[in-house]
Image (cartoon, rainbow, N blue to C red; front, side, top):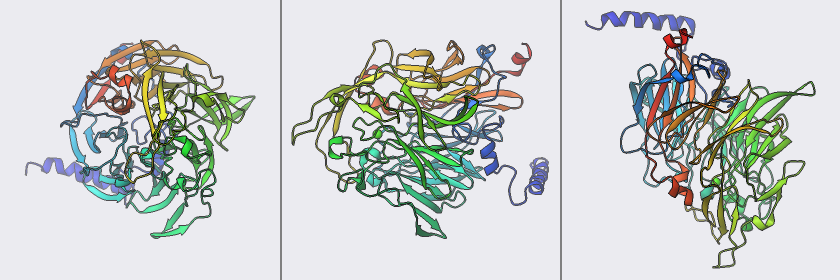
Length: 591
Ligand code: CA
C-alpha cells in the first residue's frame, strides 16, 4: 500500500472542499472569480487580465529597479512539427497554467515546474480555412472546464484535470470559411464567442452558450438585416431586435455574404453591463460592389449579454475598401474631466486612428492618428466619421481589367492588428503596439462561391521606413499626445501588458521579450526566447514570488500576407515555447 500515505490527506482536503462549497470542488472557477480577476493577483482566469481587457497588473514586487534580475525558471516546448504562430495568453488557476498552441491544441502545465499535465489536440479536418495562420488566442475557464474554439469552428470543453472532452459544439460550417481563433469569454454563466471568416464572405456572428453543456442561448449576426434569436429550452424564439433592415446599407443580396466577422472576440464592462466586441471587414474587399455603409462591418458593438441585443454601434470605417477590420479591442477605462468621471472606452483601429468613445452610449469623444502616415482619410469629422480621400480608394475594375492601383497607408494588416494594447491605471496611458507600413492595392471582379476566398482585391504591403516598421507607443487618451515611442525593425505582432511596477512588457518577432519603463519608455530588460514573441504576457503571484509567462513562436499573418515585408522577416525562426520567469525572493529581500 505504497500510496496510502498520500491518499489520506487527499481525502481530507476533498472533504474540506465539499464542506466549504457544497456541490462544487474548491477549484471551480466561478462567475465572481471571473469578475474579480482584475484585482486578484494569485490567478488569471480571464483573457485580458480582467474582463475589461486592460492588461494591467496591480503587482509591483517586480519593478523598474529590480527587473534586471528577472530570470527564466522553466520553458516548455509545444513539440511536434507544428511550430507556427503562438498567439495565446496563458490562464493560471491553483498553480496550473492552461494555454493554447497553434493547430487548436490545449496544454495544462504545472506552473511551478513547467511539467506538462495533459495535452489536447483537436482532430482537424483537411479542409479548414484559416485566413491568417493556424493560430489560437487562448482558453476560457469555468467550473471545472477549460473551453476553447477550434480552426474548424467548434467550441470544445475539456475537463481541467484530464483534458478529456466534456462537450463539443459546432458553432458554424468550416466549409463555408468559418473558424474560431479568439479566446472565448465567460460572463454571468454565459460563454460568449465570435467567429472568423470575413475573407470568405461568411456572416459574422456573436453567440452565447451555456458553458456547462454547450447549449446555444442566443445568436447575434453582425451583418445588418440578419435576425438575432434567443433560445429557451432548446427552442429558438424570434427576438424583438432584428439588427437592422436587410438591404438598407447593402445593395441587393450582398448582406447575405457580408463578412463583418467578430474574429478577435471581445470584452465585458461590468459598470455598464455590456459586451464590447469589434467586427471585421465587409465582404468582398472590392468596395465598388457594395455601395453604402455596410453595417455592422468595421464597427465596435455594445451588446446586452442577456440576449445579444445591440445597444449601440460605432463604425470606424464605413464602406471599408482597404480591409480595415474594426475588431481591435475596445478597452473600458474611466478618467476625470471637469470634475466629472467619464466612462470611456478606447480603441486603436487598423485604419490608423485612435478613438475615445463614451461607453455608455457609443458617442464619439475624440479621435486622432496614432501612426505617422494615414492617406486613405484626411481626418475625422465631429462624429468620428472619416473624411475620405477619394483618390486613395482603389478604383473600380472594368470587366477583365483590374481597377486603378493606389498606394495607401496604413497597409491592410493595420496600423495595429490583433495584438492587444494595455492601459495603465497609474500613468493613464495606453501602450499601443503599432506598425508603420503601406500597400499597393487594386480591385478585381469577384463573385461569391461558398468556401472560396472572397476578396476582389490584390495588394502588396511595403515598409514606409528602412530601419523600422514596428513602433511601441505610449499614448495619452485625453490629449492624443504620444508620450514616448520605441521603434522595432520587424512589425510588432505581440500583446502588451503593464504593471504597477512602472513596467510595460511586450515581445518582438526578433525573439525578444522586452520590458520598458512605463513613464519614460526606456528599455530596462530583454530576454531572447529563441523565436518571435507573438503571445500576450501575463504576471501573477505564486508562493510569495512574482512570476511572468509568455509564448514564443513566430508565424501569424505577416509571413503569409506581408508582401515586401514578408521578405524582410523570411529568415526568422519558427517556434513553439511557453516561457516562465520570476524575480527570486532572495533578490527582492536584498533591496
Ligand atoms: Ca479582414
